[in-house]
Image 1 (cartoon, rainbow, N blue to C red):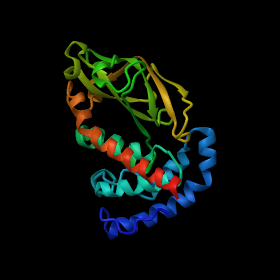
Image 2: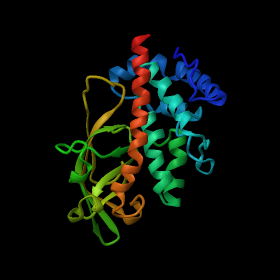
Image 3: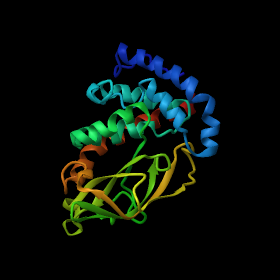
Length: 262
């Protein structure tokens, strides 16, 4: 058990929540860890069970089905998940994609996606990294060009956590390639869209239970209303959200290291 005695970052409510997280993971995740690692994916039944227990997207406001809690509750989930040895993509949904939709999405987008993300009925991903581009977000080549009232998305992405399971993907694309970073936008693409294809579930040296995928977009048409936030503001949104993503990764890494030490 992860020893939290003497910590000052959490209060009594966080620790009560931690007890719930441990009980749920002991029932839902721990018995299935070997299968998740072997299959390279966490099943939707587990996503729904974790969501039903209130462990997904706890910071999302009550208006959209969440608990409206602080990031400390996300940190508790991240620590306990890593400490049992799971790399399930719950933290990506709770710590990253939910924030983009709640902070930058339209009211319609929030009501369409957030309740399902909280319940585990909807699984999300964010498509940043590209083959040959890596972490240079200004150098992405995926485009989303306007055609009437639609955007036409073309390009490929890789190393997407939740890529095999994802129902909705936040795609980082150039709506105006000539403007560089200022021409970058975020576009919501649903998995059932024509021209959307999943590649293979990638083999990795670790985090085997996290489905990590390639995705391909071949003339995928989405309405202009699928823009997340303002056109051309995507790079600024990414810069605003990436610090919390890095914090989330650090929390999980520390808990994983503690597991190895113990």
